[in-house]
Image (cartoon, rainbow, N blue to C red):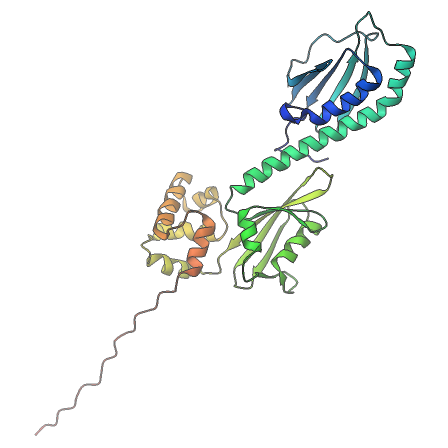
Length: 328
């Protein structure tokens, strides 16, 4: 199961409902004095502990690895593990005055495999749900179109930029590598079903702009391998067109070079390396260009350039032929 950098530890804070239900079902059968769970969250290397005494539930918190565990006669334990994510132990405890009976221990042994499976499924679901929530939150603030697409081709999520692109009045038509015309939505669905993680697929929009999709993947709550598509749209304008259109708006030559690199899809660090300037200088140039063009993002810059009229060259004056003078 793939691990996302956005994954977070499960069974914490308000996300303990599933764990409480699982433990509640087992407690109705075995009636322990208390239940403890301790697990290691492998991506961060942190260890967490969750505890419930009768009706009182203590929230999971970070603990040190070394602590006293109940003796074997006092506790019934079940181990659970999600590959690459976490591994831990759930312990059901009774005091010495009320030891476990043989029928209860036998009943617990029957329930142990099912309990382990429930804990593993609940932990994996919470981790991937948290990853998806954080991914969507980060994507919503981005000006770049970002979509989550299931293997079936259905769009699970689209941020504002992607939704605007898909719901344009005149649907964009993509011309993929095979030369066939299709809608943008169909092309996105096909990528979600077929593209592998790390792939970059290119196409051309009907208006001549270049379109590139970067593909990443992660597993969601239903264990589907969801594709994360990040779209980049590059202007069809040549560098000379860009310079001409920017010159009429008061943009300097250096600022125009930065804009040209942006239209190629380069990031700030890549632009800085190409032009031998710092990233801060790149940001300053872009800020000045945004102000001059009245936009606030790179996508807005692209729209402003495509919408700007091409400067009309001034006609050269034509000299009329000189009059002939008749010599007397």
